[in-house]
Amino acid sequence: MKSEEALEPEVMSPLPMATSAGEIVGSGQALQTVNTGFMTAVSVQKPRERLKVIKACEEEAAIAGDEFYYGWTVKAQGGSKLVEGPGIGLAQSAARNWGNCAVMMDVKETQDTYIFTPTFVDLETGFNLQRAFRQVKNKDIGKKYDRDRAEDLIFQLGQSKAIRNVICNALPNWLINKMMVEAKKNIVGQIEKAGKDVARQKVLDFFARYNITQDRVEAKLGKKAEAWKVEDIALLYGAMKTLADGAESPDELFPPTKPAEATFNVPPELKEQIDTLCGELGVSEADKAMRLGSCRGDIAKIELYRNELMIRVGEKEKAGKQEPAADDKAKGGLFEEKK
Image 1 (cartoon, rainbow, N blue to C red):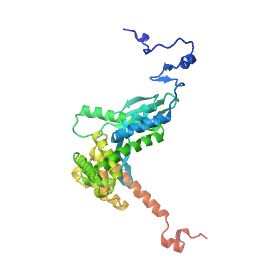
Image 2 (cartoon, rainbow, N blue to C red):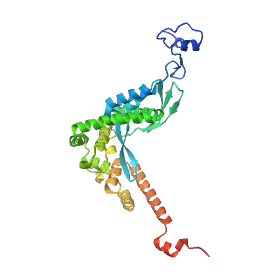
Image 3 (cartoon, rainbow, N blue to C red):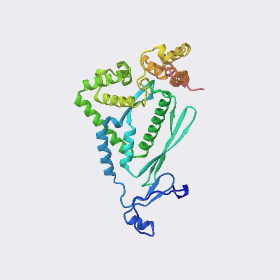
C-alpha cells in the first residue's frame, strides 16, 4: 500500500511527450491540475456549445415532466400560496448538460439547524457562486419514520434544496426557464390526454391518501375544483411530487381550513388577540385557519403570527392617519395655513 505522501491521481491514459502545458493542450489532450477538491480543466480545444446545451436540457425536461417540477408553499399577504419551480432533478440535469462544472458542499450544524453552503464552480470560465441554506432539524415529515430515519431524510432534503438553489442561481435564468417550460408542457399534455375532469379527480384522490380534503386544496388555490384550469391542475401535480418526496408535510402544503382547537392548540388569550387583529384587517376565516394550522400548536410560531398581524394593523393605522379626512379637506383642518 502506498504511503499518504505517495498517493497521486491515477492517469487514465498517458500524455504525449511534451515539454510545456501549451504543447499538451495543442495536442488535443486536456490539461488538469488538482487544487482544492476539484479539477480545473483547460478547455481551449472544445469550448462549451450553448445551443447544444439548450437542446439537451430541453429534451431531458420534456421527457422528465413532473419529475423536474415542484409545487410548494410560500408566505403571502394574509396567509400563504402555492408556487411552482424547478426540482433537484432539473437542477442536476442542467448542471450535467452545462458541463465542465462542479458543486462542492460545506455543512455546519447547530443544535436545531443544518447550515448547508454549496459552491458552484464553472471550471471553463472560472465563475463561482456560493449560497447558504438553512434547514431546521425538527421539520415535520410525517409519523411513519423513526427518529434516526427522519433525521437522515431531513438532512438529505436540506442538502438537495441547497444544491438546487445554488445551481439554479449560478446557471443562466433563461436555461432554467426553458427547462421549466418543457417540463410543464409534458404535464399539461398528460392532463389534456386524460381529460380535465379525470385529471382533477386523480389529483383529489392522491391528496385524499394524505388526508387532505378538497376544501383545503380549494382554499390554497382560491377557487372551487370545478373552476380549476389545466394550469391549476399542473401546479397541483407539482404539489403531488412535493408530498411524494417528503419535501413538505400535508399540513404545511395544505393547512386545515376549519378552526379546531385540538388541531391548532391556541391558548385562549392568544386566540382572542388573533381573532381581533384578523377582524381589523379583514383576514378571512380560511386564511386564518390555514396559517394557524401550519403552526401545528407551536406557541412561538403562533405568537410570531400574532406579532405579524399587529405590525400590519399598525401600518394600516399609520396609513389612515396620513390621509386627511373629508371634513378636514373641506375646512382646511390640518392643512390650513398658519397665520
